[in-house]
Length: 124
Image 1 (cartoon, rainbow, N blue to C red):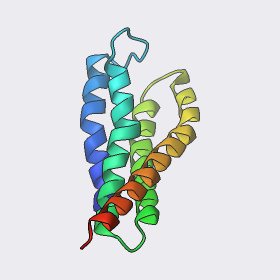
Image 2 (image 1 turned 180 degrees about the vertical axis):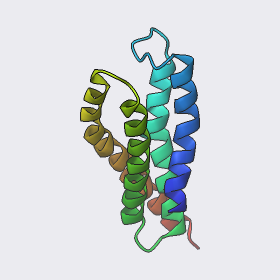
Image 3 (image 1 turned 30 degrees about the vertical axis):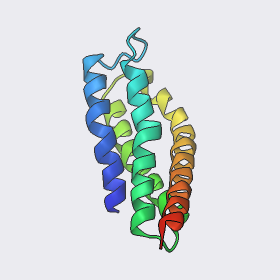
């Protein structure tokens, strides 16, 4: 559970800062939304899953998947809360959230597997 909090903690501050800098306009010509997407979809889940694999070497891939799924659910709750305050068709953006789940959990499983293999090779 602490690794899922790690994923949320790594994702929310930079993503919310970038969203506020661009005034929630994802169609801006700035590269900042791309940075936010990379952090949210690749970097944070990989770090959280690697940490889970190091803490739970008995089933690292399973724990990596569970951690990234919990982190995705927490970030989805924040996204839904932010979008529900807007008027109009903002809830149409929720259609991509299952795709984000597949990406995040896939990255998490891969990172956990690589970490467990790396740790296995380094054991005396």
